[in-house]
Image (cartoon, rainbow, N blue to C red; front, side, top):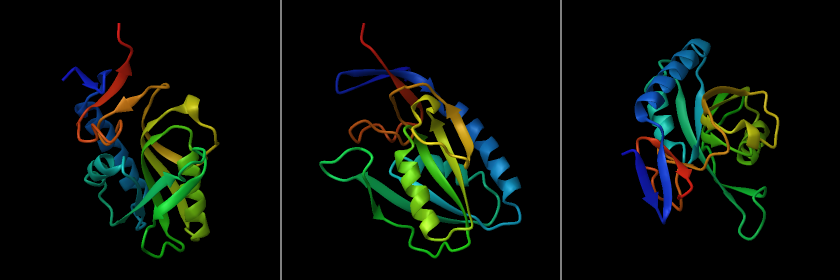
Length: 180
């Protein structure tokens, strides 16, 4: 599909699955080399990371563990007020943690996740994201180590990213285009 429509919004193909797979393979090789003598814990931020994390971990060839967190905004407050809905469920004290995100936009949820993990006494934190919008970042991060694709201020769906809960299942990533 070269274009899709969701709730009267038009989207065009932006990054196809073949491009995504190639980039993930390279990220997996880099992670495997960097963590060859370690036993990292991959912490996926749900819901958006699920497709990316599944494909990424197929390319990581070192012993590792997997966990997830889910974040949401408090009802009735600004976007910056985040609540952890459920946590990692394992002792991360002294562990090397790799946070897996689908997209880093403002960085608010990433900042919250990093702060929560630091309070748990982790040994190190690296961030791996499929997409990043550098022009939208509101925070500075020294630990974003792996970025699949840097994009502009695009509204994107597919490959785990949704619009009103829809389109997470699409293998490709689509970007919103204005109707003509």
